[in-house]
Length: 147
Image 1 (cartoon, one colour):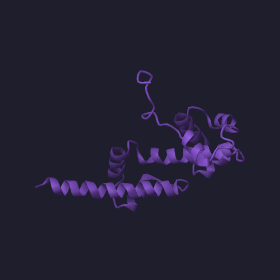
Image 2 (cartoon, helix red, strand yellow):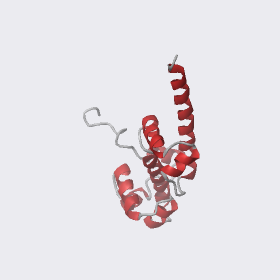
Image 3 (cartoon, one colour):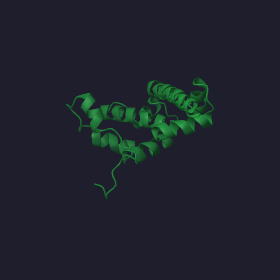
Image 4 (cartoon, one colour):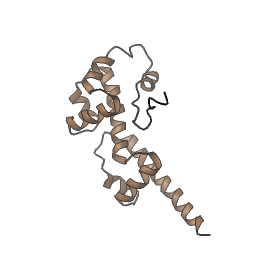
């Protein structure tokens, strides 16, 4: 009967991980680090990182950056802010790190994306534009052999 306490602990951990993910979704533009996220659910940073990756397929930091890039894409499509302003608006403190992460998720630099998307979603409802332009993480992309 030792399996039941392990299963119960796993369910408790999953509930805490959901709280962490929900916090990231709400506070993506705030300074968030793994230690602060872990303190909020009374876990060690290492345990949180391992469990988060097992549950969601990426690290807490990777998840934060994905949320920031998604929001940055929407702001860049709007076209009224510079890339630097968007970088700081979504909570990034380094333009270089932001641009690198953006490029790896979207496949082009933020400035190229802004130029390309300026008119591409005009007249499209925002919920449709968000779905059409959502970044695809590398693990979700189809390989050429399966396409």
